[in-house]
Image 1: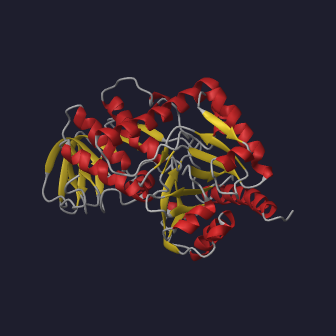
Image 2 (image 1 turned 90 degrees about the vertical axis):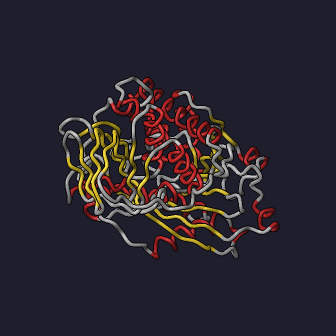
Image 3 (image 1 turned 45 degrees about the vertical axis):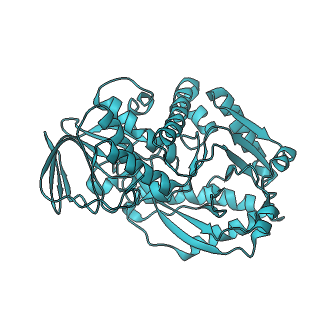
Length: 428
């Protein structure tokens, strides 16, 4: 891992490669690794530093989740397609675990699984529905009744759970840095501090930057929520902003007070979930619960009211930690498609621009496997990702209808969640 914290120099001059990859998050770095294994020359361009966006700053849950949720996946896509999608995300988890082991990435990975947890009995039916769907779709899981929750030491505010045994928790920033180190060791060229001004759709494609150009047989859009700003996928994915926090380290008394000895990742059964995990240095990382959308997919500044909301939820779930300080708060964009599935495929007049984006909050597994899917597309071979790239995406409506749809949907889901939270506080 020597040199992994060093920043790569910006692009200066012109360059010719087989593949130009725009974006150095999980998608871009995994694609660099996959294409280098196939013998292609690769240049990766990153506006900031590798892992700067959601890849380096997500909640750190590696889960076998794809789509909105398991019951919706089974209902909308049916048993055969649903099983293929679940098979894909389980392949992705195995790929992440193998990559961490083979590349010796020190990202504090703990294969402890993740628990979908209820905060009130009104959510228990959602756990049962998830368990039935998991059985139908071939996903391992286990209902945890209240006594099983207590035996595992899960925090007492969570009344019942559904344990997804595959996956676990990790440090996303360290994982991103590990992928960067692996890509460099594999011979990929990385240029940080290199924004892309324009992608020229031709043969070859030409990527224009302030310091030079890259001519490439293939261009890969590994920019997730930022992809529409390059002029692509604006009808396929929408940019949504989410927010997280990290507490100060828990002392021994605080750790004993909440127990949580199994260290499973937790996300709640809300329509707009809350997530919580323990870090290697005994902090709680949590957040989500609400999302924000900027008209036209525009960037949004931090919102103090949102941080107040997610901290209030944390205090309700962990009353034993009422005096624990919140030390860090941050937020940023992720991307969704209307069917909550990643958009994977080809575009451009000659089909030599490839993309993978729109992970709907499940990007640790799926973005890490994006490189394998893109390599399969480049080499025109079959693979687990076919279940994504063979489908027709649902186009998003134009503005202002898009704004109305997003606001209406989040308003309805938020109202459902607020009723549950009032019940959990002892109010009808």
